Image 1 (cartoon, helix red, strand yellow):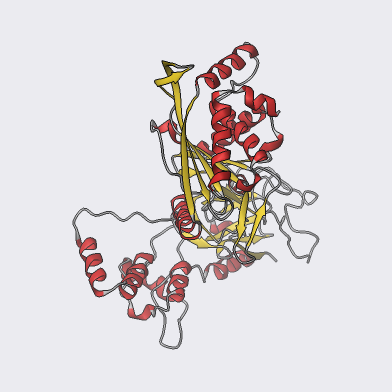
Image 2 (cartoon, rainbow, N blue to C red):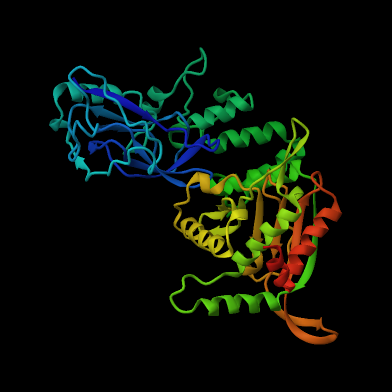
Length: 463
């Protein structure tokens, strides 16, 4: 007897609580193998392919592309035992066990973890191809689907899918995120008029109601006028953009930051880089980048000033100085600003740091960074000079204690050895958490970085 199992959006780690469906990789009726990717989702950290731990026939999908789902919400249902996926065997664990045994999944969460069984070519199974028990099970499993898998949701389906919010009857809400948002702000959904199809209450409707409740009459009037302006566009703060917004806002709220900066003559640093790359010769591997050199300088500076490689435990009222330097670097991608992290940068050579930066940058551009590669940083290097600007006052990447900003390296008039000369100059800026140190420590760190930029031999002496 086939069973219909429900696969829910798994915990993707790193404290993530929701994800947006970007692209379905299977359709209703497809045959899937254990650990075959079934959907591509975007979290606040990265794009992730989610594998299904069951093998069988997809009987229902939950959510259209573009829908946000919380962790634990149903993703799809699979009829297990009705059709044996091609390429799977009992020995590999891709089907059911012995007769009468309960089917078991792999327990995997993300692609690349666990058994890693290779995906098989998907095969469509028409409803008439299912056995009668399987078809019945598939029909019963599809009953509670809150969002249709292939067609727009008609009013009748919405009404039947809605869970009553009390004794006064159902509310035209499909998204569990909308319900959660309303509960958090003590909103009665029955008092709202939905702007979606057939009166469906959308997230924008709830957010508008929240603003009208919390705003003063004057602010509400301004908001209403802004909403009524022709040609206005509202861009949802979600995914990477939403995560960045939340982190930056939290940094400004919690961290009493201060910024100091200095101009440095980078002529010798650029000459040293050219010499290093020339010494390698053809076929010696990737060239040493300026960012890799600056990253290596940062690790040396943090060894001298460990106060800046720390975080503040607000509840315990303690400064936690961290032993390892997990160096984040800002990278601009089509999905927005991300900060990949080079683990244990203090133990790496310049060449090793450069190779890891190259790997992470490529993964960021292709959207294949894992959540673990975007978290856990202890200090951030921000090279905004690539945008053609000289200076900035960076916002600290919460919960870190400091960020070094690097402007463009350009020829400028400079007094060198008592004479006016044209030198390659860069502006360095350090934003730091004033709770972890005073200006003397921050200034000492920045001056050491500038000295290494101006005289690379200073760095060599510390190795």
